[in-house]
Amino acid sequence: DAVAAPLEDASPESDEIVEDTTDSTTDSTTDSTTDSTTDSTTDSTTDSTTDSTTDSTTDSTTDSTTDSTTDSTTDSTTDSTTDSTTDSTTDSTTDSATEEPASFSLVSTGFITALVPGAATWGDSFLGTDGQCWPRSGYDHGIGGIQITTGSGETLTIREAAALLGDSPSVYEDYTFNDVNCGNGPANDNGDEDTNQCPGLVTRGTSGCSYISTADNWWDRL
Image (tube, rainbow, N blue to C red; front, side, top):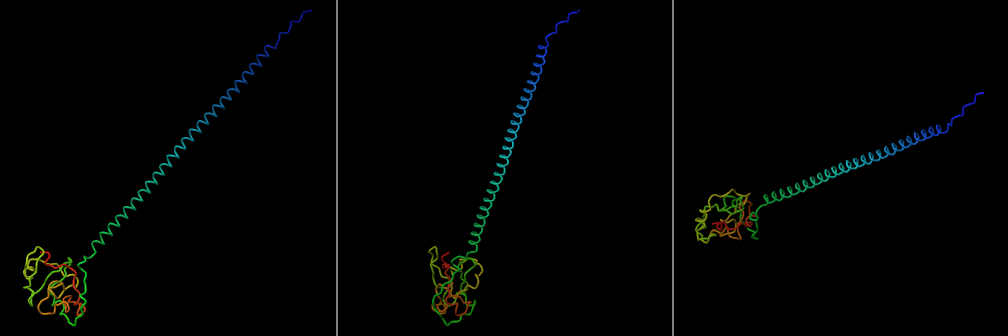
């Protein structure tokens, strides 16, 4: 009878298969783990980058918005301050421009007279729109020859001094006075310009006679 050939040991081959399978599984697992780790790392890096970019963008946007808001607030405040300053300056300038000089004021002599002036035809002087007293007279009743001392120290008659003044402005309101110096004398020799009579306004009847101007003597300007 033929002798059967001995069976070869299949274990080594089986071990190789197992090793191959193990290696393949290990490699696959390792690759998968590596890929997962890489993906996770990549995702983390991407998220971190995205977060950083987002934060940066947000910060930039916030800074830009803050800057814009600050600029807007600053501009608004500046404009408001400028407007306020401009308004204040305009108001001050307007008030200053419209404020009348003190010389436009009238004061009373305190005397009450029964004399009735003849309105503007009695006037020998007036207060101009420049706030100064100006003579406008026929220089009757001896007033033209009365001597005064000018601002420069020269002695002249009232008529002579009046001739040196030049052109006068318009009359301020109804401020026309009976005497030659807006109610402040000297009076003529007729008696109607005396302090207790009617040196003042001739445009308001008896009640105006006591009101005289606070302007300086007109010859003081010479």
